[in-house]
Image (cartoon, rainbow, N blue to C red; front, top):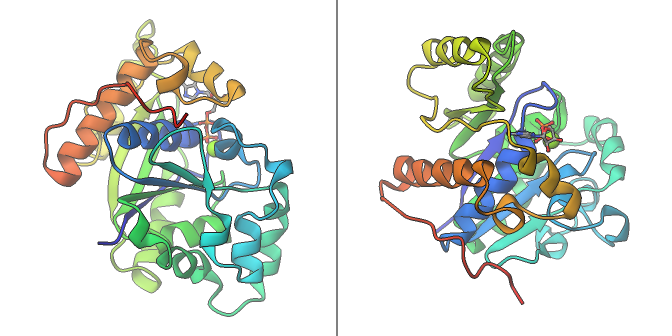
Length: 270
Ligand code: ADP
Ligand code: MG
């Protein structure tokens, strides 16, 4: 068995790509799936969100992509069972320029992940807020599709046509399996009418892709990363946790066709 690989993409920053990849991944890990999170953002938010300090890493995604080190050597355990990390460090910021001159530069990540794919059920690639080579590498590596987080705010759909164009091009040229596997509405604020309008707009635009589960704006979700925690370990009873748990259950229903109730116990490794 090889992992189902998904990437989380939207060139807009701050729409909850990282929050969604990390917390959906955490709940899948809690359900017993073996999950690898790949941090392709030079800002290393996914890495720090999982309690790993990018400055203390001796090897990271940069070395894998640019120096051809085996992905296996860069795999990092987190504090949670079934949840591993392929971490990013700041040197990744220079990777796009260096990759530009390399052979098969769009497929570097896909090739690296192939060698560890049999160790996992799911590999989640957290993408940077751009449509550059790192994002293209993620889209090319995604065997099971791209998940697009969309923030419930004014002009939410603005700019998405650029992303959709990129997805179309990658599908034509690099990865004919690339589908839009899901759209996740994030940071919903029930107190505004605007939120509801955006939900309707996005559902009209992506009638089949949008997840029923909507992630509310929740302060616990924004606090957890600074403690190096997932929402499941930081505030498992919060509205944000409940939402990501529901999203994970909906995800498993969609992908595996199974109804699962994920209990938030016994994830801590030690
Ligand atoms: P991206 O990866 O798309 O740039 P992030 O996941 O880093 O976005 O989220 C942007 C910021 O918003 C982060 O500070 C994060 O903690 C916060 N955040 C994400 N989702 C929520 C939410 N549902 N409620 C409140 N804050 C959130
Ligand atoms: Mg991010």
